[in-house]
Length: 78
Image (spheres, rainbow, N blue to C red):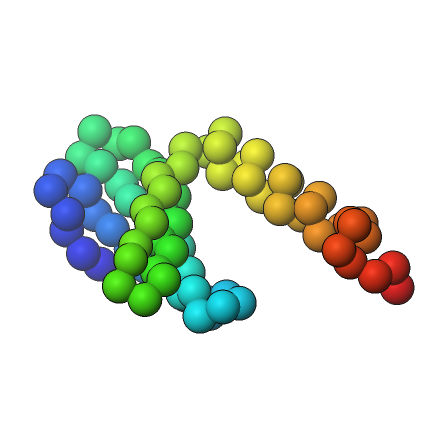
């Protein structure tokens, strides 16, 4: 667990994505009680950090699942 300002940060999982990107999922719990999911995307020396509330994280999960569930214009049907 890491302490960042007034929050506890816990790493939940890490994955290597296509084209050399590294993904890290964290839970961020602030002293106020607010909890967020943090998605850190690393591309070489560049980082993108997204803090997501439950509504946004749920939307993202559903959108990503839907994006890959049916063949799109660049996917072959199986």
